[in-house]
Amino acid sequence: MKNINVKSKVIAIDGPAASGKSTVAKLLAEKLNITYINTGNMYRALTLKAIDENIFQPNNTIDKKNLAIMLENTDILYKNDEFGRKVLFLDGIFIEDSIRTPEVSEKVSILAAEEDVRAWLLAKQRSYASVGMIVMEGRDIGTVVFPNAEYKFYLTASPEIRAKRRLDQKGEVYNGATLSSVAESIAERDRLDMKREISPLKCADDAEKIDTSNLDIPEVINKLTEIIEKKQKQD
Image (cartoon, rainbow, N blue to C red; front, side, top):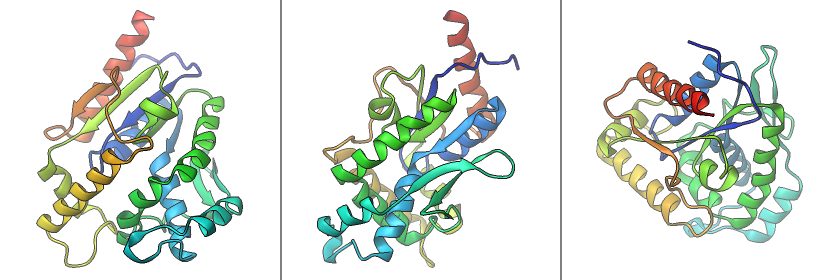
């Protein structure tokens, strides 16, 4: 493939749970040799800490007073590992192996609906644009974090395909989960993400919407690469 002109521009990839965006974003960044930032993992890291500090109250309400204290005493940072890749640290501890649990998956959308949490993370997410061209994925990258991103994509897939993918993901579901129960969980996650008042999940008006239901990962990456190259030629 031809080299993509590396400018301080953002490749924003949004989409619902199990749409394939995390895998695609990571591999696309590797292909282009640029930085990859997974904002969903940042929310998961906060959720993990919130669980440990009993921020979640009965009926999944939030202890807002202690949440504010937690945020004041929390450090989330992507920094280079020994291979030069950006990896996520929470309070100085590498935690990417600890945030893929059913409990975190179940509660992350609840915490992500908190305005203070989103505002706290927004500045951190935007700061990574200073490193150069990046691939950033999440649920509001093209609409809120980088509304003027040069490249915007929204990945989706059919409910059945998404449920199958989530069921196959290690650590994401409780033992004994079925396709039906996972589909219900994803539907609830969609409802929470799309209906929240602050930065709801939606496809940006100028984003390329791609249904990944019948595409494998290399096909999706090639499709995104072709769109990026075509846009670069037009600039």
